[in-house]
Amino acid sequence: MNLIPTDIPDVLIVEPKVFGDARGFFYESFNAKRFAELTGITTPFVQDNHSKSARHVLRGLHYQIKQAQGKLVRAVQGEVLDVVVDIRKSSPTFGKAITIRLSADNKRMLWVPPGFAHGFVVLSETAEFLYKTTDYWAPEHERSILWNDPDLNIDWQLDGATPLLAAKDQAGIRFKDAEVFE
Image 1 (tube, helix red, strand yellow):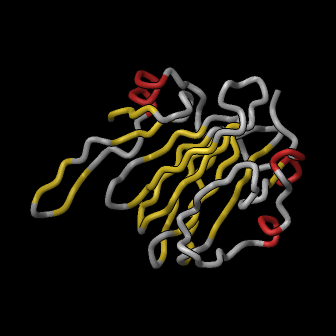
Image 2: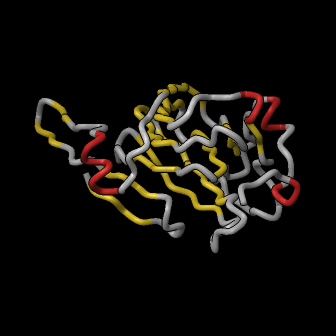
């Protein structure tokens, strides 16, 4: 397993060591001991989620204001553009967004700590996306920031396509009005 830093120091790209030959490939997708050794993160994961989405489905930007979730995310089929926004008011990177392509081909994972809004858009025909979370989903604490907030100015790489959004994502609030972490 290899860690790659991002422009937000607490957000990490995790690259597994992949063993491949003519038969296919094998890799260890998660090892709690190794993950803790590399990252210093020992919080246990308590829930796994799996979604399948069509091209241009955009999910996010989501977070939980209480029971904040750390997420280890990856695409196991297809390709997504993953988006993370720092919503920790005391952070030097508050309001900064980063984008990372995650795909079945590159096998990269992304560690999204608590205190960040998260979303993704599907770039391939379909994509299956896995999330390991450090706390349980709590719909009463879930919040959604508007995906196209002009203050965040995120390039979702839609190339003029209209994203397919859930009602909660259409109703997201502006970043400047969002409940954030201190």
